[in-house]
Image 1: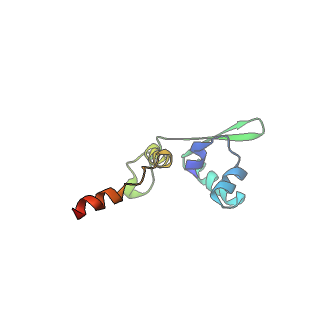
Image 2 (image 1 turned 180 degrees about the horizontal axis):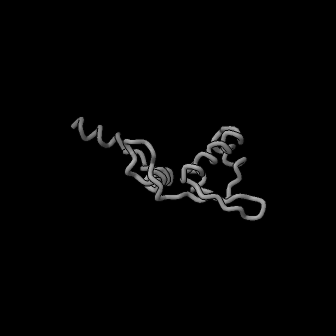
Image 3 (image 1 turned 135 degrees about the vertical axis):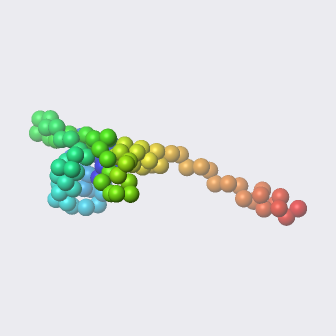
Length: 99
């Protein structure tokens, strides 16, 4: 959910639900929980809500409690956007080991 909001803060909850593959009602509940926990800020712009992530909010699980949300988002977006490495040419390597 946070990743989708980071990608598109103006996205409607309906759009987020479609991307994630859950109901709009479920998205509403999750967004509400994230807002109450301080992970999201909500700003009313006209008839729509725009969301922003509180990147300095700490993760709440004890094993990751010292990490800010920013680290999680950066890790996921970097992984998401990193170009795939071309497959290694194993035929040349196999030929070299046969000799």
